[in-house]
Picture (cartoon, rainbow, N blue to C red):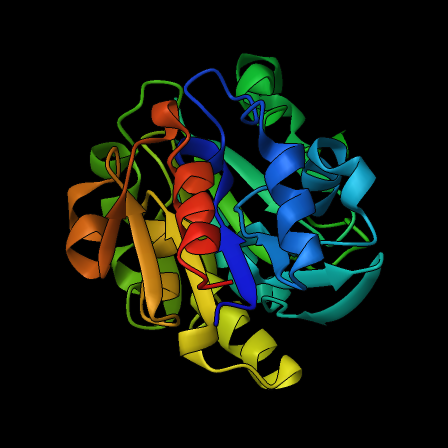
Length: 267
């Protein structure tokens, strides 16, 4: 029986217009009746997830920032912090490259460099982050980084950003999060790690969990649950890693699949 369902947000749970399916609340009600927990698992900041799911603050488990921080009932369950000197080294690789924007992700706030003209990226950033501060330098930020992210407005992150971090492929978790984003976390800090940690904490087996995703920051999740679903619209390597394929996000594939679980008595 499935007892815990994890879902990525953009390109997965949200449709092509960035909206939740109209039937979301009804399906969540059915899951709650069956004692099945739901966990948004996203590269988004916790406060961005909370804005989308404010009525579920005390019901959902929130896996934010690509699994580097997990909260329930507003309280942190666990997190993974990057050493500040390492974050500084990584930022320095791209600080002087035009068209690449740096994001320092703390537990509470994300920070952007003023000199990088952050207004260029604010529309994109607002999809993922709610608590945002513009700073002159990352050096005096009071928070520790849990993730460092890099954005290009040209949708060419795979070619423009990802190869720059080749020196860190072995020592850090470098992932292509979308056509626009590359995220860097500590090695092993990812959504799959968070899924496994929650399984251990809650006494669940992989066969009791389902996961849904569409991009490479969902890769490790595919190996952490038996019911691993890549969306029909997913990045091809992720579809190869998943056990099953769900209908596309435009077809509300997560909701359709969950309703199939219920109809088949899987949850």
